[in-house]
Image 1 (cartoon, rainbow, N blue to C red):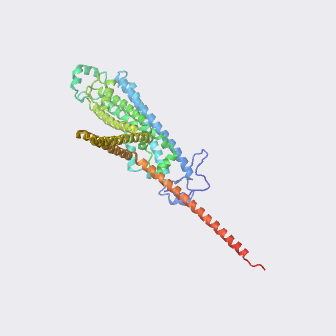
Image 2: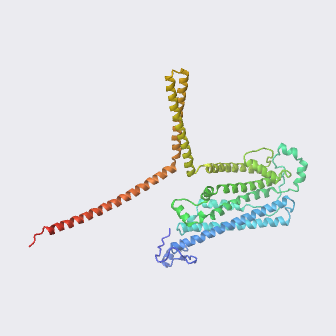
Length: 476
């Protein structure tokens, strides 16, 4: 840990738009004593300088995140353009155009890896400043190394320049369904497969490039107001809340749930449709169109599964399974959002409960009137010696009215129980605490006033004693 003593004469903030400079220790004896273990000792002058450096590193990390997202998007777009041009026979895999496009993809991938390395370097520097440590090696642990390695591996996958074809592509194909075999003949498949020749290695190296979409999530997190606001960061640090993507995603879901779900659905739908088309077009060139792929992804995403179009390749089946999992998750999120949107607010709940309670009171009064009416009719029937059947009918009406009164009162009790929630309990407790504090303050003020009155009465009593002594003093 840093053993720096702050200089009280230097302000904590306000660097006059100058970058903070780190300086080395000027004590030659300390440097000679630690020359074997530490080559250079880096110190930051004040807390203000550390805050300024931290702010600059935050901005630099945000720029690195934007550049990495731009490079990942550029490489993915180049990959899609190259594959689409090959699908429509505009260029050939052995042509120079395809080679140069793949070289561009490789250059963007290498640049992306360099930018990611710089991003993690800045992240480690932020760790050293936030924790006031001098050795950056303390920020390196197994978890961080594993995350960086997985990220580099994901971003390094891309189609390699060159022409590599599969020797037995048709033999490795999955068996087609009866519907596909009845609509497409083997001769048509072999004749059209020449114009849609895509080496299988290109597919397996191109599809993982869409995993770079996680950089979009990182960029959204770095540009979030909660992440940029220093007060929010301080409040989160006091409450031990980490401002990571999970927290930012929950915040967005609570504020803009509809927009987030729409964006997730659209991005997943388009990427899955294009990937499914790329996998299936090797085996069913005439049926594997973009519209059919979108239809298959839609029925799989919504868990409908008509079965009119089915994937025949293992790659397409894997994409269908992943799409079904994403669709189930999005469906659960939609249900949760709708349940929260349909829930009454506190004001609406108060109005609703008031109207229901007023209606129940009216019904209770109406049933009470029915009880009185039935009792009067029973008395009148007994007095006029009416038939027993008529008397029993009036008694049944009176018992029914009494039962309805009890039922309405039970409904009122249930309504009262549902009205008093944890929010109302907390609010009542807060109001009670506030009233107790006000009462305590008034009691203290009253005690002070009583003490002042007591002091004033004591002073008056002393003056009266002095006056009495003067009046009773014998005159010479």
